[in-house]
Length: 357
Image (cartoon, rainbow, N blue to C red; front, side, top):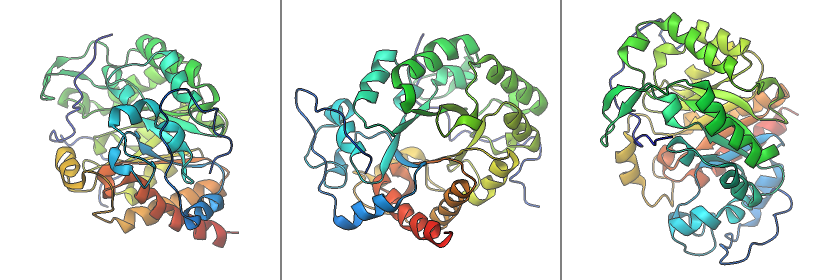
């Protein structure tokens, strides 16, 4: 299956369409040490270990990937190249007191085999749950050139056979019970799709129905599907009703193209009870490459977003109170350093949980 370009056109203009919700009106037991060079974990202070111990079960915090050399002293205990961290860094990452999940973002650019997934699963302890992104060859309606510009329609868009064979099946086989949300992140849709909102909902519904059943109602113990959008106008009551009928979840996308987290929680509520899935990707008002350049090497908080942290802490507590699991994945481009963002978030979650009894 050919690989699409990495850029998904996140900065493309948005074409208005149907009225949307956003219109104003330490984990236990690391696996045995692998032969070869190992990456030591950072020496985590007692206060951080205590914070991790106080986090409730089934609240999963993780980052978008883990291969960042700037995390030396935060996650890792020694300097290492990003290529080495990518191959061997997960045991150290998963020994961090707060990090019991991670997003496999590389799968967005090209499919992985079952053995590649299994390699990752072997590096983390039981109870760790991955978030996995579907390949963009399935979720991008257009093919793109090296600069991310559309070059024509994508014949593989929403192909359930390709999605099953090249994404769902190998993911489930390789990760097993360590698979969590399987996220279909839809790049900005072309005008012809946005112009037919009812048709888009029907098409996505048919796609989800054709996949192997993975109901979100079993999300505490099994993987399930979630969908993420880059076009706020498609997040409508009709779309949320369809997701509820398909037992899939709306993934909150905290991104420059999307409304603030507080407004997106209205869509989460409209899908009814179920797991919370959040991907905190990009600081409001920023472009991806600009944020990357500004925040590199991702070793400190540089642009605090306390309002988003407050909203996400409340949402995680609400999910927990309802007996539902919650995943919150943070990107370095959110505040400057994803592990430190999650530490600040945990400091808001724990007292709220304690106050709720």
